[in-house]
Length: 124
Image 1 (cartoon, rainbow, N blue to C red):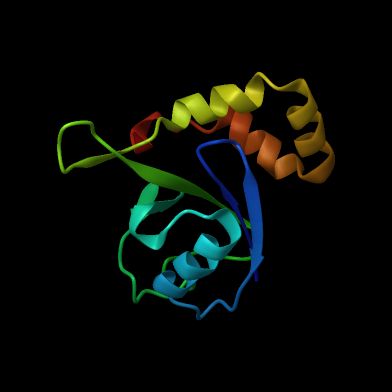
Image 2 (image 1 turned 90 degrees about the vertical axis):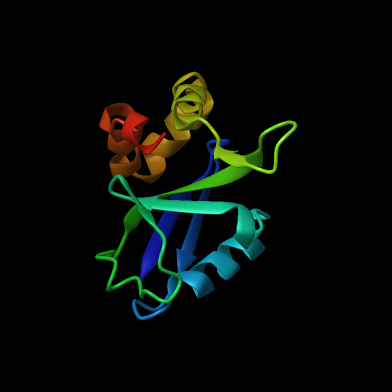
């Protein structure tokens, strides 16, 4: 099945996987595609964070052509903690780039709907 991941910088990554692939293997594939190390990845689908590395995409309720959010944990200065980058910042960057918006509109109408109408603030 084909999945589309959006990252914090507004980039998208389309990957072809088997529905029975486990999350940990999808994350390894995303590391190769996006450059984000597995340990720094946060993957969300329909407003919920995917946390079970042994869960298959099918078990997570993810189907063909699903849109997922790939966020990167960033270190908090002076601590050992990490935090998620601002998903609203990502949405605003997309909305503020007319060339990217036009490209997204040509490529996928569903992506445009996601960017324009899905409230990502509960994920922050």
